[in-house]
Length: 363
Image (cartoon, rainbow, N blue to C red; front, side, top):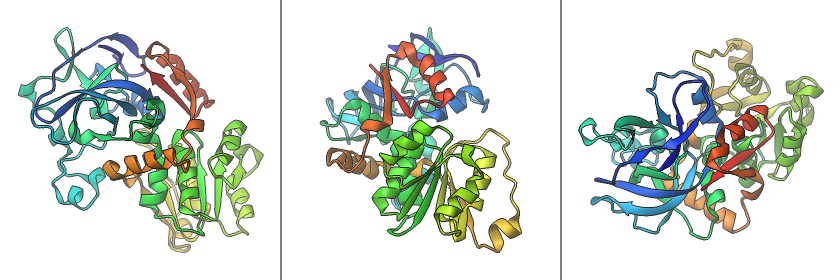
């Protein structure tokens, strides 16, 4: 199959032929139809994390089942599915209590060394990053990493459900448990941030403040439910947010960019008793400097890291798919452009420039 391969950290992806194994055990083979370009993969492309190379990245994908292993029970050939990087065993106490994103045995979904690699080039193993490897014409995955969706949802829209939507909207709905009447701020209006804005609107937030340096993204955020917008170029972000909330600050803030500066802002724009949720990936070794007394203890604020929107994706992704088909969830405006696999490096250059919400590779 054709796949975009990362050979070295910081280098462009190289589109080449990669060999893919046949499914064994509980594995499912998919024909990939669409794969979104998420900032998390860009982060991994440019920040050494100790993983071996070469690797096939990509983790936001939809496709059709073409073959199943002998022990697969959840899927059949022809099923339309969405992938998710939340590998989980399905039997530990975290999984059984609806928290697969905290699974204690996630490594069980990978192949044992004696079973051979799922992906290879000329006999040499290729890492299947995020347990998916979605920048490819096919994926071979454990059945716990995919979920069926209504076949009437277009593939390029369905792909976004696997990361951007569950991460952003999930953080607001699941992690923060946002309630009607809450005031919310979202820092960063890319694909995940816009999904967080939309999640706040779905949850009934009274005020949803979108924050970004790109005016076009702020205008786009209004189409996802933002009631107000703030551009840091116009002045102090915290003061702008407080001016919109009667001087109090917001009940909940969501930092999606992954910078220490904006993470600190997320804390300091909170009202008394508010909570900040850190979603964006930070560079290895990044530190957050805050005044514990004045930023946390006295105003009784809290800070929480969020992984994949605290989503039980086997339930949440089909739910969000239904919301889209019912007209309650906007996926159409999340897609800035569709591209070919050969255009993937150009797509990431545009993502780095900040001009797009989501580019989607369509096969």
